Length: 365
Picture 1 (cartoon, one colour):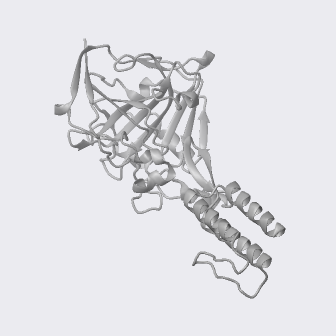
Picture 2 (cartoon, one colour):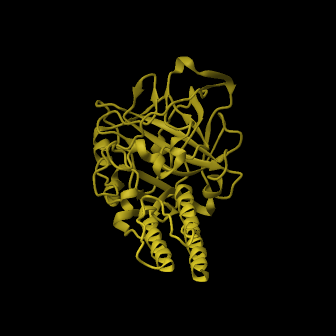
């Protein structure tokens, strides 16, 4: 019986240490209690076969290994990790190729398509998710608001990093003397610092994430910013008021004959997922990207990031006056490849419920 008790203790410790879920732990605990049964025999749960022809100690040890191995098989040992600034869960025993299957997708039928993003991170199933549809006839109005200002919009960066992060084209900038692009005014209580710019598009001329007055625009640019009270984007990401995203809508105009957007020529450098390219010569100021966008009638609401981890700490600001994108620019964006090597035909998240949230329109003085 001493050996039996030792096995019982070892069994219980092993079950706890592999971090199985509570349901399996209860089952394991219940099963462990059966090890302490009478000398007449051990009464196992029905799903486990009773061994009657062997000694009690061997029966208990055999059952321990049987249950331990079954739980290891059924309950995958998972660990949280961060990949491209989003939380995913991977199996410790998986190869990198297998891990890529856990990358979120915009295909409804994929294992981790939009309806199942909450399986990657539970926040994606929250009540304050983005994007949403907005009817400007049913918004609160803030009169005499301070104008939204982008400070440093004409600064020419020292270098520009272009990245295909597997689901979008992402731009980030480095300036001389560690200068920053700041956004202030509008709904912002204090300045927010630009972290990156990225894009969302569709398979046709409807690809914006937000829908305004039943219209989905051709594409949507996101200027992701963080609260200047924090030293880094990562620190701000942990705070309920840490992030703000300025969304600028693109309108397709087949008659427009102006210059291409300056970022288009760099797409060929980052076709493959997770490829990056740093440009130091042909750099340009933010103004060349956002043009002379008009922020009058700016819309704002509390929401989330629109990709996993879907954290609900984002103050959204949306311009209702779109800028122009050309057909060839949309075609170029669709040449980018995702984690599975497929073209990113569309990368906008389905609309989320507003759940009673208030959208405010900011009217300037």
